[in-house]
Image 1 (cartoon, one colour):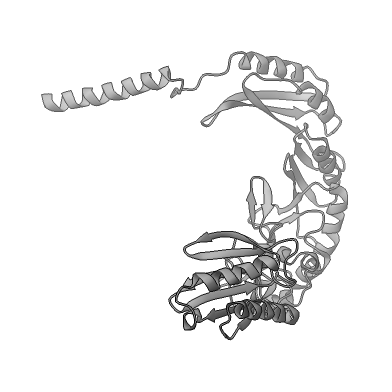
Image 2 (cartoon, helix red, strand yellow):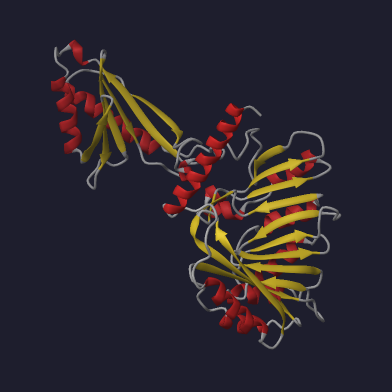
Length: 422
């Protein structure tokens, strides 16, 4: 190594060391420090838990919060028997504060006579109760209860229309996921169950189709811990076309109450592209996760008359004849931030009023129109890029939700839209 290279290496090392020292001085260290008193508090908690009758072993550790100020204190308890009553005693013991740390606790219960092996978060009583009920069911291999819900591993594929209602009744409102024993199972499944989904029609369809692989999620997305997006079903079968036809003919009971809760499905075999669609609706060929729900046009003839009449009256206020055009359309599109409007129908109208046939300055006819709109109960909603938006107020014209007006080189362009109708 040349002297120049050695000087360069020393300079780089000095920069790194100086950066680390500076970061430490600023309170952002490379090696986070355990909060004062946290280890002592955790050691004391573990000693109390180990002394509790029925506890076979207990251990724990402290880990940093991955860039957050809080640390995580983890306590793992192993019971000497399958007696779930230990969970309440552990819960009382772990109701303590570990300085600068959040506390997570797990309790492992061995299998017993008529009970499967289980691991639960003892700090959530309703999860403990649900897990205890479920571990006593036949064909249950293992139960895992966390703050989010309970995962139940089954030894064999269930009869869906029988097992899911049973699980739902035992869970007491706690979300449950039914899982197969592993990738080598005759049927692989990962099926989420909440208070209402999957519903009886879909469960019956699964019993008819008998897929090789079943994945069902009650929501396609989770944002901030809350479900967002329609339920999704993914299955692998031998006969894709037959399975897809069955699903398109299966009622979606949740969608009867909320169209945006309609289940999407994907049907695979081991080689071809999947068939995608919506439960209970004809196939459209579009991907349900990237396209809006199929649209069924509602009867909005009264609204269509209302928006036409509104713009005809607006044009008459200028004193210039003009022809109004109307249309019936989907309320919204897949790119809209309001998916609840994807399936709705609304009537719209538009007109170009050639005001320059009678006016040199378009301001006078513009003011006549907006004065008429104000009299009709509309109120201004602001202006952008030369387009003035108006919306219906408490005294708004019946059948008109919004209107716009814009000046163009050809005259005044007016539009009106009726409310969205399901």
